[in-house]
Amino acid sequence: MEAVLDVYQTPYNPDTPVICLDEATKQLVRETQAPIPAEPGHPERVDYEYERNGTANLFMVCEPMVGWRDVVVTQQRTAVDYAHLLKRLVDVDYANAQKLILVQDNLNTHSPASLYKAFEPAEAQRILSRLEFCHTPKHGSWLNMAEIELSVLGRQCLDRRIPDMDTLRREVAAWQDDRNHEETWVDWRFTTADARVKLHRLYPSINN
Image (cartoon, rainbow, N blue to C red; front, side, top):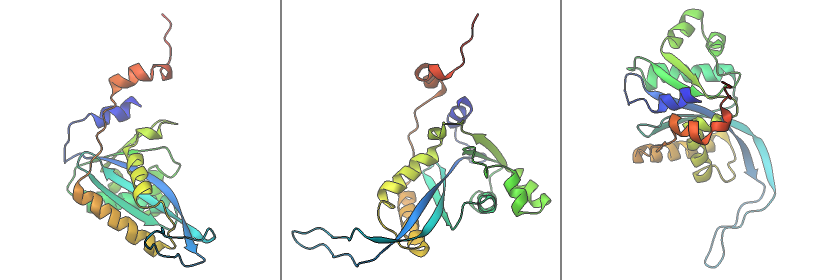
């Protein structure tokens, strides 16, 4: 826990940006009856029946200190999908950075081994050389600021029926572009000193 909090207190450095990564699943739902549009005195009416149309995975990548985020929608959540996301971060989004500090949880696909499943060893090692991983502790995923972005995405964009992948990608891209334009950033104030007081029970007892 303190390792993550210490990373968040590090002064901003564009050569070593702090990036947060998390994932979420969205169920795709088709309407079986066309909604009745809103009219004066009546809200929009939507039939309670629906048709399931599979699920999608959303990778949330954000740099909280500068108010930037990128949401990548994929069909699945596999080690190869994760590996290609890391390659995109290193080669496209942060091509000029010396090293990326990546805050993420301990999901089984969130490991260097995923890169070796997707790329030849030399390419996997090249990508890894640009990354420094900082894992949130077990039951401590709330420490990942990407969870905050996913929560906002859920409330502002995903809290309704979305029928298919194309629609999901369009809606998420519109939300992402608007939020990036506003440069909305996370005002994180919880520090290591706070943790030692407020979460004292989580620390081991030392008997003198």
